[in-house]
Length: 220
Image (cartoon, rainbow, N blue to C red; front, side, top):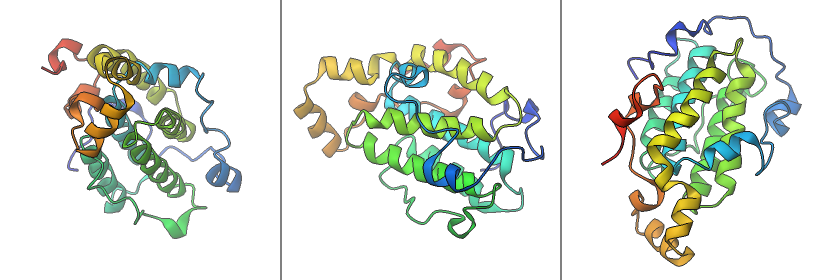
């Protein structure tokens, strides 16, 4: 990916000292960032968004994570970001089995990137089943990005995105889809790769800039 979302650049997160703990409790059990469960504030916000809106939020959050931790000379994290943007449209061709940094889990500049990719892989698996656990995996990924940040810039951006994306995609939120289609119809459409009606239309990358008017990116 040749550039980065413009609102990430002024956030003063790159090259900041690493001040967070990164030990087995973090990368094995997610202490400090794991999901708070189905009633958590973040899950309640994700419930108002489409699956594709959430998958795009995960890709955009990966840009924050990469800008925070990655060595600019290392292409692997940037390739991962590009893959996650492709996965926000259709995750099936995205192979996250061969993840970067598997041998560097304890490294605080690389381990969180691997943990994030693993968590997004779980998001893909549960999205393809339209399983509510998708929301908890997504929350864990978003909280991980917040966990490694040196300031509140990412959290402020994410908070604004929640409302922006709910405005754009609420007609394809999980509750809205389940209210309009039965489980058999949902499963059939997902099996056929007919994602638009279940996950909502794909959004352009710059839709994740909440400074832009919601109507300018409204699908259809």
